Length: 434
Ligand code: UGA
Image (cartoon, rainbow, N blue to C red):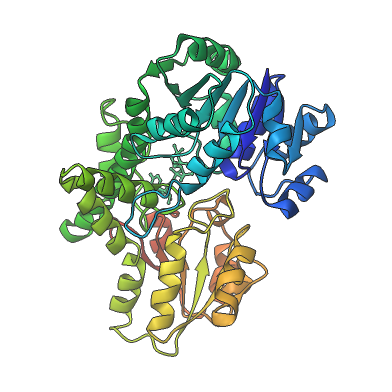
């Protein structure tokens, strides 16, 4: 099939590349000329494990091309994917100007039937707005399909190639047939393609992310309670996760959820609910608790140093909002750094992938180490904000030799409690005994 993908961010680029991988001809469009040049030269602009291989393979086979020219891209395409940003507007609602703007541009270029697929996370009713834009600007037949993406950064290629489900919001039989054909290679194992109306599909995406954010937040609260009552959150996690109705995944407490999706989507769903005069109380609490959780590690540090960390130096491992990404949007580490610095402390950081992104926004406010051990030099204590694999089994002798004191504040529960006690550390983690 001939496909156009508009927008080459995480979602667009992964979608375009993975659609090319099953033999489709995919042309990706972006207004950012420098980025398009970079991709045309064979360079992947983001860090996403496994994407490189597919990207190069499909470029070499001429199935994956890039352009800044929208007209070239949509001319022959049967299906046009929109994977455009929906940043929070001033009032917290998703800003639809990119999507509606692109719809208008496309509507002026097409001359035959197209399926317009929206991949971005958009408020309920957006498909109707997109349809209205087409109705206003062209008499050419189009079907607008809501097809939310459920990719996780870091495992996005796998998630696209083997999705748990594909959600398609459309009532058009013609569009259903084309989309079923397109997605068939990805659901061979029997995972469902779920057809529904556009509004249900749009809400499914917000409901999924908000539910997951709630699940994490619930565990963060259980963890905080564990510390007070002297229970161990790992045991409680296993105890409840073995119940299939609860499930084992997404029960890991930490320093709060971050990233470009959960915070934005929870906020947008609360805003949408408010617009319909519905008070979505549980999500309001989720937002509040998550704000608190982002600085829980610094609260622990402050308590340990009796409220005074002025002039003290700390090491911080992990900057990305989660492992296997260089993404630092809404990363808890940034809040931790901010709090430490506000309280008069200095920080040296290390992250396997996200250092450049942090340098670009924080500059010389903090120091950057070449590796995880260099970060420990002259530090009173080590703080951990992201569970990168490379931090899971470090050389504790080396840590002991470099770090000034055997003190670790672990926001991701990386180490065995007994081991840390045996090694003589003061080890403060989330929801576990000291
Ligand atoms: C999330 C969803 O998982 C995807 O399904 C969705 O497509 C995507 O948002 C999106 O809307 O685009 P992502 O933001 O890449 O994906 O990251 P997650 O792996 O879901 O993690 C989100 C946050 O939750 C991270 O800060 C992570 O550290 C935290 N988390 C996750 C926990 O604190 N505990 C857990 O047990 C799991």
